[in-house]
Image (cartoon, rainbow, N blue to C red; front, top):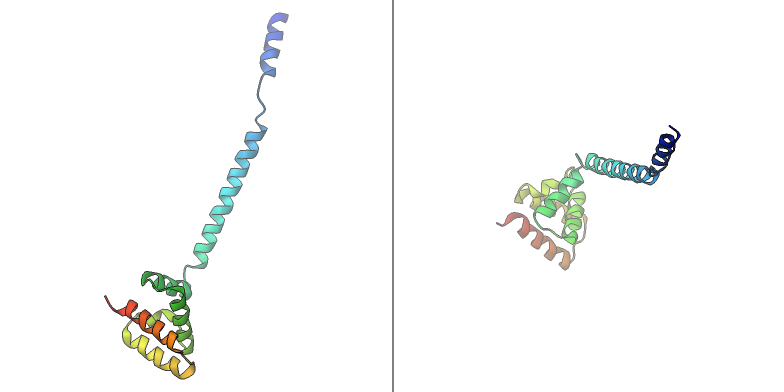
Amino acid sequence: MGDVALRYQDAAVETSDSTPWVWIAAAVVTVSAIIAWQVHRSAARNEHCEHSLFSELCRAHRIGNKGCKLLQSLATAASLEQPATLFLAEHHFDSALTVAKTKMKLNGDQLATIAMVRRCMFTA
């Protein structure tokens, strides 16, 4: 009987320590939770934002950063509630440009950029 007890004790002592694996699993769960929270937060923040719609339309029409900033300035100068209305039709764009020209000075480079952006938006 004593011989069996000694063998059992030896077998019981040979178990491995799983503490590092517990820490690794906890770290993976924590990092995954933080990433999921950040993704959810950014998606909720951009869900109904007029600027995100405007940015998506600029991206869809392949308008660069300079053109997007200029369009945003035109929309602000024309007192448009929703800047994305510039993309609806040519007459919306032209009327906003006319109003904006009275309120802000546009140099030749800006006018050329506006003409290029208008072509990107309304020509197939």
